[in-house]
Amino acid sequence: MSVITGIGVVAPNGFGADEYWDATLSGRSGIRELDRFDTAGCPARLAGLVRDVDAAAHLPGGFPRRTDVSTRLALIAARGALEDADVDPTARSDHDMGIVTANASRHSAPTHREFRKSWRPGPEHAGVYESLAWFYALNTGQVSIRHGMRGPSTALVAEQAGGLDALGQARRTIRTGVPLMLCGGVDSAFDPWGWASHLASGLVSVDPDPATAYRPFDVGAAGYLPGEGGAVCVVEDPAAALARQARVYGEIAGYAATFDPPPDSGRPPGLRRAIEAALADAGIAPADVDVVFADAAGVPQLDLAEARALREVFGTRGVPVTAPKALTGRLLSGGGMLDVVAALMCIQEAVIPATFGTRCVPSAYGVDVVLGEPRRAPVDTTLVLARGRWGFNAAVVIREFPHGN
Image (cartoon, rainbow, N blue to C red; front, side, top):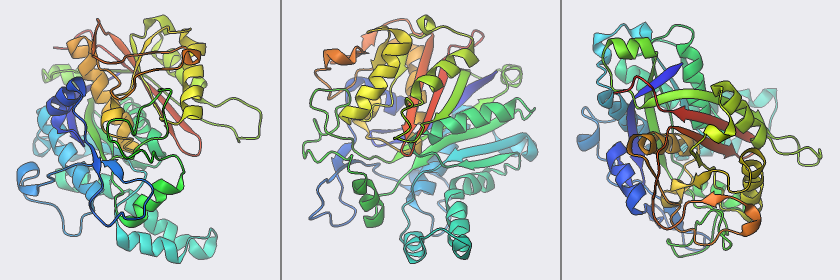
């Protein structure tokens, strides 16, 4: 068992868990026109953007030189999580603290230039892949250096599913005897090359209206909007957390990851298997889940596939479903972790946020999407889902901790 004792959030609609949660309940969006470079001629121009990334305000001591946007956001979120958990890294043994972060895309023109020069696979191109692997590990390395964490460290790449995988890896590491792990997912890729990579998917909404461009599960769904940011959490062994009288937000009760089969295999996607495995890992039945935080791609065929998996596990309209990411865009590895924060707040305050922007869900989907206004309801157990491009699926069960305070 592992528990979450600290939360750090850097989202398009709020810094810190409280500001983000207030925006989530009130429907305050972080979607706006991308203005960091000339987007004239681009078919889509909306994104979830983090504003006011000020080192003086959010990170005493400033950022390391030439730090990319993703790492800056990760450093801010990590500091917020440690402060929220009342953890002073200098007062602890450096080997008793580890870190695991996820990344999917980076904002860095130099690295993008290097990749463009040498993109084909093969032994002669090993250098560029080693460079990219190092670059994706920047968040982990910079955060561990900043806070003197020399315990087990891992960097993961699983696109949108990566943040949940980081949480699962942190729980696995806690079980080996490490008392505290810092984990999360933070992403940003809003330079011209990064934006082009988003658009190349063909799944980005070209609707120019921020209020309707990204509306998951809606009859008018026409794609997603990219976003940046994410969340970092402090994960601890329950006994260690209780011994220091830490505030406990909730328990990581179950986790599972699967991979989709090839598109022409005739086999079903792996999301349902991930859901069922996570519930089994938590030792609970579908009826025990009070709300599902959906992956919510906003693409009709992907929404239909997720709705089918939910219907097969929970029954028709068998559980409330929500997608706060409609207010932030899809944050790649940061998206799942931001949903984990919302799930923890949901448990604390007994309210399920609405899926803003979505108005009419096709009856054939058979899912109870929370629409219009937040729904008051007791919440003990939540399920958070994430799917990454190229077949990644992850599911995490977040539950109220019986001895939390």
